[in-house]
Length: 344
Image (cartoon, rainbow, N blue to C red; front, side, top):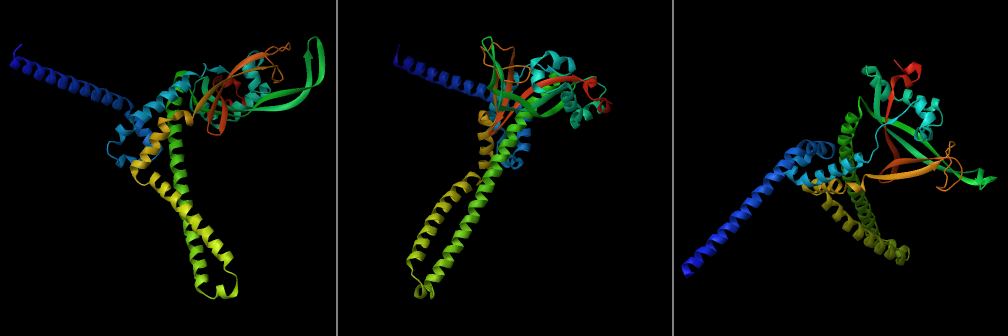
């Protein structure tokens, strides 16, 4: 191969590499635009629910794309772990250990359904015979003493843990399980967006609190320095004032440092967008799902897995967000299960 031929080969190879890089970059751009089009509605809903002003940020939708996609994927994973809808009603209370555990009596179950304003409105507005909804409850464990089997012997005054469920709430009543899951898919993402808004509000409040503390410290320092220039040094010892002055100056320096950090967190609309990205991009911090397995007898007493006492093992789903926990279940029930006064 001549020198000219070698040079041309190098040129062609370089041009081929540039073309391949350009094609790869173009393919990535097209893929990102497809993802953006697919999630555009979700991004806009997140912006509406968190901080609408971030629309003033250039390319705000593209900057939020990855975080919203992560948040949506997490929410989809949570929904996939929710079992099929559980039937509520008198027959189910007698035969299904989960329904029996959730409600103390059949009357308690029916009262829960009948007293819920969302359920009443659903049946009033729809002619459907059945309703699907999300049931949330608080699980409580209370220490008691009672009788228990130890081998073949009945032992009294045995420490027991009684499990009960209270504060039942029904959300998003609709006509089918598929519609309910579709609604929850959107609601869980909006839940994360609302957490982003809470985060922004917390930072605003923190900034305001620090600014007020800074103003108060500055006023106290001015007053103390004014005393030092007046007659007070002639009337009292100055050591105490000097120590207080040093303490106030140290505290003011600390507050001013914290205030600078707080202002930087929400200094521009890009900072607001970043707060939304942080929440949506780390959804596991704000919404978790924990499977729970309990073995209970008909009275709600927790049993050891190897206990000889009769009981049933039930699988539960606990939804947790920050410091709050709720037992969640998709449920279905008919109009006939409502108390007569609420059935129309």
